[in-house]
View 1: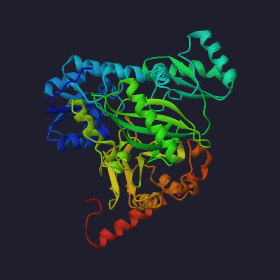
View 2 (view 1 turned 135 degrees about the vertical axis):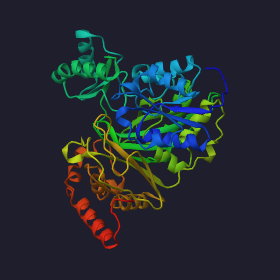
View 3 (view 1 turned 90 degrees about the vertical axis):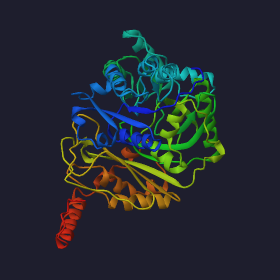
View 4 (view 1 turned 90 degrees about the horizontal axis):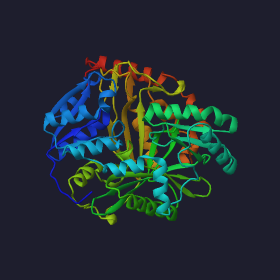
Length: 486
């Protein structure tokens, strides 16, 4: 991509939910016009009312947000000269970035060849090998049929079990299967291929050595088209369910020499890949030895970018837009200070006790959010909002910042106690239980945390919500006010 500058006047946000609102806010701050798109099921969404223009692109569900032609049509119809893809949907599809380029529309993200290379986990590993960055032992794309099974068996015999089957085009925790032995491998391989084809339109899979109970650490980077690259610190995303993150902490609590080595590895990875815009380099870290390995690079804005923003004061979306305009990075590395701790929790409409089953279709009868020092909310719901059944169950991300880990947890607990949602079950009481768990308080956790701490699922069911609602109704009745009118 040659060096070029183009002033952006109007941004189309090719996404939905809380991230659409998040991007919209920065676009407004930059005095740019905003356009949102939506499927029929999202017609109640709050951000539609805030945008300068809103275009319904179809009845959905989901398929219209994945339709490049429809989104480009909406961009042309609205006169948008830039598109921000958010996360998920088309954000890591190289053809979308390429089609934007062909249409003369600025894609607020990396160029298509970079997305294509880093989106394929096997090619990404080859890039990291050239950069001398340690990566977990793994195969190339497995051959089709029996040859691929023989290849996988040979790898398992060489490196031992368990191993991981992974979709080559995977992301977001999907297309990953843990395999415990050869008999299991024979069963799982065709299932993994089918899952990869369904999720990503590509049945390619590869095998990787399984690192047992590692920590999952990621480094946020920013890179402009002139070769300037900085990092914005680290995030610990180890507490997960089914390879999907629940809770993210910044910065990671690791020795300074380990963190510095990871920062340099992340910057070198971006340099060798020719990276431009915001991205995240993800590593697995041995909990005992602190040895680390490259896992993948996400070529988009992350769900958990808020913890980094709160810690550094850098608006990552703003920097994405400036970089896309062809501007130089104006943040010197020495200005990045990681003071204190920040943590993000995802308040989902789910029942953690029932394997995090989504609560779609339920309406928020009461929604009372917390505030005060160190509390940030990024959400899309409001009182009376009906949780769609067709999309993910995220209602609001809550990011807490404190002077140190102890104060951050105290603030998190205070904010959770003040967060009242009546209607769908939510992850709030689950996080309350985590706040009292000794290992979490000590900062000692890895990707096996939920499996090794089943007691956190023993929180009281519904008692807190019912008691709070009863008290709220009693108090407001005494004052003769409508309890739902706030």
